[in-house]
Length: 257
Image (cartoon, rainbow, N blue to C red; front, side, top):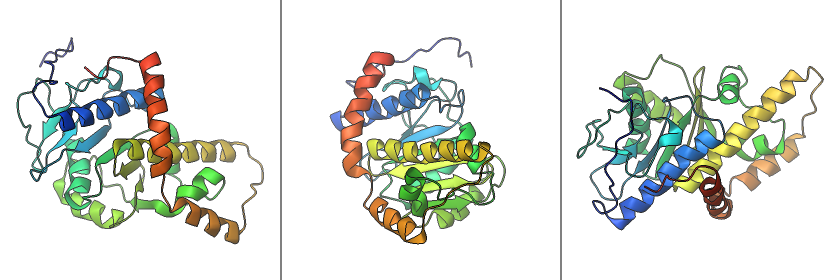
């Protein structure tokens, strides 16, 4: 397939208003990932569940950079990985495996984000995982699940093990030797959860690189901050997301096409 240019037919008048809103927010999330430098060329994925009982979700077309993503270019797939409707682009099979595993069992996951950042993968390679070194880590640390690396995620047999490791209520995951994963009830919630995880990983890498003795908070403070973080980031994401969209409109417009 020749992907030397991006050719997309507008979906604005071909889908419901509800689906279009999800498409716009998801395209924005892709471009924000690029804006924050979290992208890995055409690899890694963000998916969003569509309303209804069909089990359809949107995911990135394989071959587009995150900075190129638009609401109309996103691909609709079913739980078997089959493309629904017409689309000029394929879907990364490894991306489908991971995201379908989460969407299949976590019906609270309206959005799932998976990244391969240097800092996130570095922490996912450190035996102790995310350490309780700073406020950001303490807020989210108890919400993190861990999943063993099994090779490139092409084998659907891995899905039950990923589902079991994620469990019924964790919102974040470190994929050992692989990267980071976040899910949320909205695209905004998911992006902010990933922001906190990636920020905590960056802080950990910087702290360990200082080659100095580290100061840890007390167990009482660890528990208190974990309880404070357990209330979730939903209220904060409602404030942060409009601001992020305004930033995106200034820096990287065109996602709502």
